Amino acid sequence: MAVDPNEVVERYNRYDADKSTLKTHLQEIADYMAPSVQNVNNPGLTMGGKRMTKIYDGTAIRALRVFANGLYGNLTPLSTPWFALTTKNKAVAESPNVMF
Image 1 (cartoon, rainbow, N blue to C red):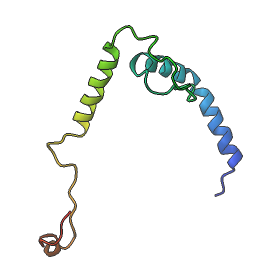
Image 2 (image 1 turned 180 degrees about the vertical axis):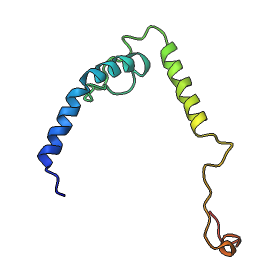
Image 3 (image 1 turned 120 degrees about the vertical axis):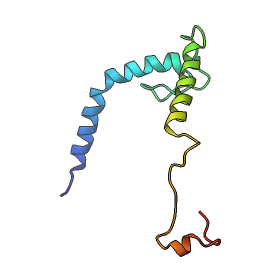
Image 4 (image 1 turned 90 degrees about the vertical axis):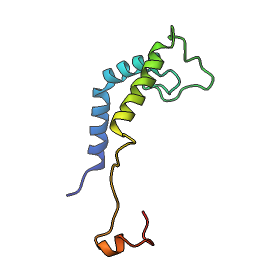
C-alpha cells in the first residue's frame, strides 16, 4: 500500500493548525514555569534575550522541579529492578563467565 507524500504533508499541516491553541497555552505555561527553555511557538529564540520578564518569584519553577522529581521517583524507583537479563539455557546463565 503506497502512501502519497503530499497527503502526509497535508495531514501534518492540518493537525499542526489544529493544535495552535494548545501551543499558545503551552507557551504561557512555559513562560512562568520553564523560562529557560526555548519557546513553544517560536523555536528561533534569540540568544541573550530576556526570558525571566514574567517571573514574580521562583515558586512555579521550584514546583515544576519538585513535580518532575516526584514523577521520576515514582515511575522509575531505584529500589526495585525494572528487568533482568538472562539466557534461555540455565547452565550458561549460571556460569561465572556470563555477566549482564
